[in-house]
Amino acid sequence: MGAQLIAEIPSGSRTNRRDNVLVAGQSPLLSIAIAIAVAIAGALLLDTLGELATAAIVFAIYLAATFLCFLLVVGYLGVRARASLLVAVRRVYLPVLPWELAMGALTAGAVLAYREVGVIAIAALGVLLLSYRYLLGAVHGAQRQRDDLRAQVDELQALHSGVIRVMVETLGMRDRMTARHSAAVARFAKATAAAAGLSAREQELVHTAGLLHDVGKFTFPDQTLTGSSLTEQDWALIYSHPERGADIIGRVRGYRDVAEIVLCHHERIDGRGYPRNLSGDDIPVLARVLAVADCFDVMTARDSYRKPMTIPEAVGELRRVAGTQLDARFVEIFVGLIEGAGVDFHHVDEADYEAELRDRVPWDSAVR
Image (cartoon, rainbow, N blue to C red; front, side, top):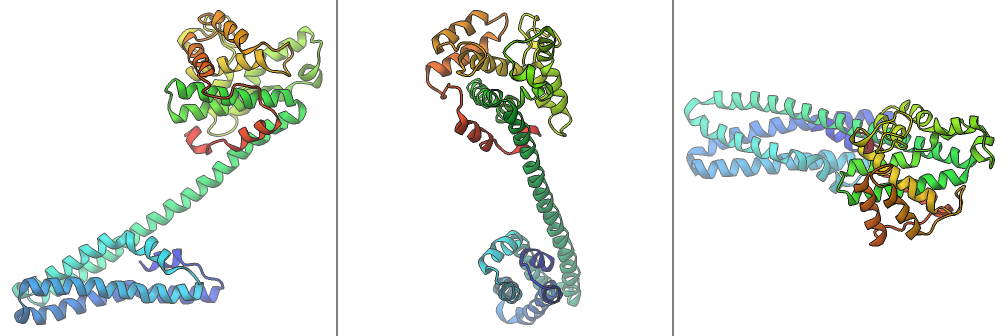
């Protein structure tokens, strides 16, 4: 427990740290000494009080003495570090309480065994206590490693979330229409996946893919990205954006599934899509979800390259291409959301776009 005390209670200077190690290092030694002293005292009282009474007293005294030892050490370190005693009890003592109960019972058992085997029982108790403290230290070490790993995962999560935000915002600096469209598609796709009963991880995957599905347009020249009159060469670039986007996203470790969704979001159920001419169930499920959301937003967006449709008109068009261009199941789920007002289906404005980036769930739940 001493090592855990050091880990839980911070200290300022190097001198304080050394003193804390010296103090906390006495904790396991004191616990062992207490257990042996209590066992010896119990053995001496055995004939006077009887077996059950002596065992109960030894058990209670052991627990009280070890807890008092803990309080003395933690209290000293806590005063120096100005740390909360209650927090230390919750983080350090409560997790090892079952171990302490077991050792209290073992100490009481050693007292009862004293009558049969004499001082050997006390010696055996000392060996067991040393082994117990070693194992407890190993458990605490594993817990600290777990906590350190969790902290590293949190840092990596923040890094990857930042990568997504930077990628989408960089695209937004060049073309706010495309960036806002990406945020809308992300929200619509996640709502559709949820209504379809897909898992939480799949919902977050399709949300992330929605934010990034047009990131391949990073590579376009301004004329292609924002021009009103496009050449055949411009259209060839536009048709390449799923592959370009998937290539960019796939370079980020852990985003392979997202890259696959982005690559396939322009495939068609009838096999006439691009870039791989996949058809039917060969198209990833989440790419089919994303395609429905993408088509709806393109048709209804105020800042699209075409005159926006009304929602009833867009619903009619979705149903017209269901089974050929789009997955009919996800079309009907999406239409059900619109008709039931399950989500606010409008093209996002500036504030909505920023909120969609902020409200992304943690990276690890989406890309595990």
